[in-house]
Length: 254
Image 1 (cartoon, rainbow, N blue to C red):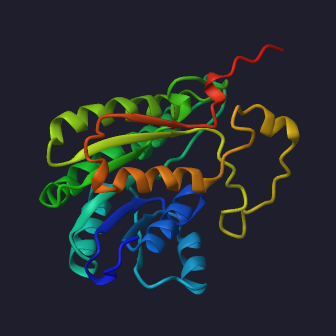
Image 2: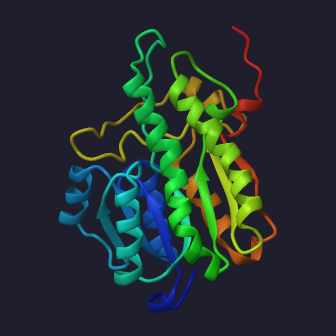
Image 3: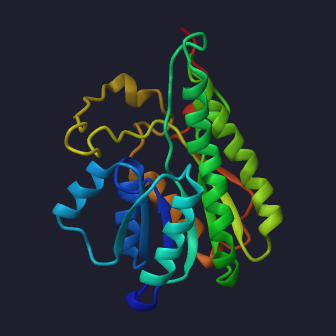
């Protein structure tokens, strides 16, 4: 854990007010990092601000698909929080429906948010990360390698993020290391804004699909992020880490 909070590294994270991003943001704060969050959902932002927002977590509203918003977020972070050392590209949306019913506008919205947003944040954060010998962590998905039906837009973006990761690692190295995490089934239904949060009852069958014996928790992703941020692991770059309890390695026959 970092001890000097006032001079601790600054981490940029997108989509950090709900789900995996919320848990990761809180874990980063606990570990001593200063955290700057770009979040699109105003309701989630205001709900968190009205609760107890820890000192050291800074929330900004904006759209990662907007070049203007991304540039403004990073500029505000530099002036109000500090020069960033790390970037976590976490925000994503989906539009899962049969391809015949998937509108071009919906396809483009997913591409613009998930893939172009990752590009934009990496582009404008990288000059600062290079000064600090920092890192980028991209959130891919096991859906980059396997699919359920009707997930074409989402799966395409996650495949693109996996490829973008190793391209960035080569282009930005050695100053910046770049890695991806591909979560499997991570249960976050209750970690939403109150209007959408719900409790899901997981069954033994749900857990037993995983060789690890359970469905994933957002803390599992946070643990991997803390590992990758650690400068002692600076020989690790251009890699994709599948955190899925072994589910993608288990053959299931119906």
